[in-house]
Length: 170
Image 1 (spheres, one colour):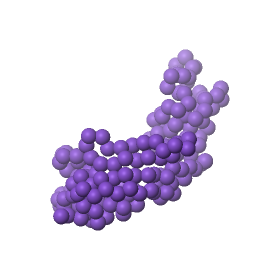
Image 2 (tube, rainbow, N blue to C red):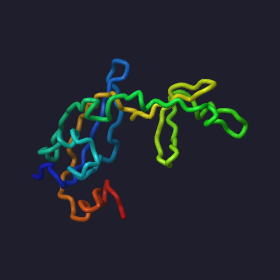
Image 3 (cartoon, helix red, strand yellow):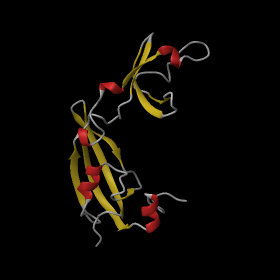
Image 4 (cartoon, rainbow, N blue to C red):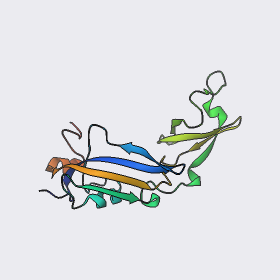
């Protein structure tokens, strides 16, 4: 019986719930395929991995990761007022189907870095976008069941990701 520890390939089924308008709602969950990762490779939230350390196949665990240890607290510095003309088409109009409150838009800064932003307001002068992670400010409530544990290969450890089923293929 293998225990989850550093450099083990771990497969888990999970459900993530967050509070929304006073109710717990499912924000994400594994579907047919489990989430597969190398424990200790730094690809997941550290506290997520800490809660799985020492577990084995068939174990289930539920835990909460506070917002500040998850995707951070909501930061007003990540709210941007972008001039409306930046969104104008060749006719000088905003595509109101694309640029509307609640939509997530891919954006790029002057250095070519890509970001995802949520439109929170559209007015004649500006489009207000929130570049905080969608789960910023939310406590993360996980229910996790371990599906498989195996040692990572030397190549997987070197590459920092899982190869084969559920992982990366070269």
